[in-house]
Image 1 (cartoon, rainbow, N blue to C red):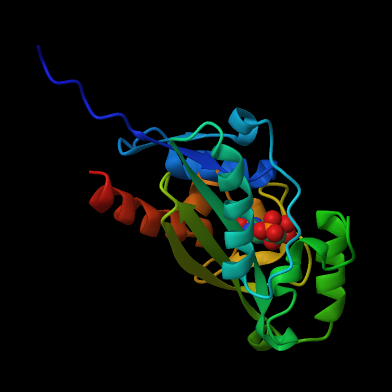
Image 2: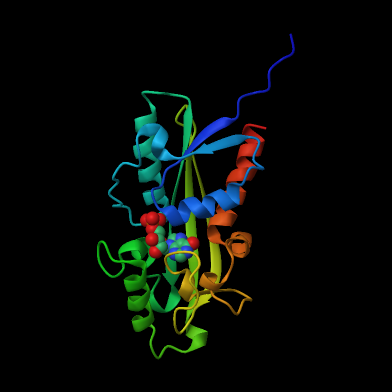
Amino acid sequence: MAASAPEPLQIIIATSNPGKVRDFSVLLGTDFPEAQFVGTEVIGGMPEVDETGTTFEANARLKAEAVWQLTQAKGGYAVMADDSGLAVDYLGGAPGVYSARYAGVGASDGENRDKLLDALQEVPVDQRSARFVCNLCLILPEGQLHQFEAYCEGTIANKARGENGFGYDPVFIGEGMTETFGECSPQEKAQRSHRAKAVGLLRDFLSQQVG
Ligand code: IMP
């Protein structure tokens, strides 16, 4: 009897943010033989997680651990969670881990962007440097934990431009670009984003581990 191919690792993407799900599905595509990515619907949805950490690394870990606990009844799943945000040098790294709630808990993306543009009003272009940060936390089915962090350098525009992406994309101009991420196609963003680079690190790790 022919030996059957090894089962790909099933990895739950631990997020309920539709913008991130879209980004991840472009990044992960179908060309990822080592792993199969599934949503949190397999465990009944994303649980509420208090992001009490002061670093992206700590918050990614909190989210991954909360989902991993829920997989224990079923077993066999790995979990991947990300924590990400925008760090602006002129603001001492703010909004940082508070990116999603910069203008207050429950603030919309537009309100967060407006607060950022207000905080940088009058600030000249050479002092508007910033980076997106993405920390990915992977927990394997047996509980082994690995974290990967990546950055995307850029500057903050004077006003929001473009309808694509989510969050701060319409005010973020990637290094060497003239358009904002809000004006880029998802594929253009995927070539350079912090999330793309962190997924690249995860891919390298998985192909060594599982391949
Ligand atoms: P998290 O869900 O706690 O990781 O919050 C991430 C927040 O950072 C999002 O709500 C956005 O405001 C911002 N953010 C993270 N990644 C991106 C991105 O790729 N584009 C635009 N904003 C982002």
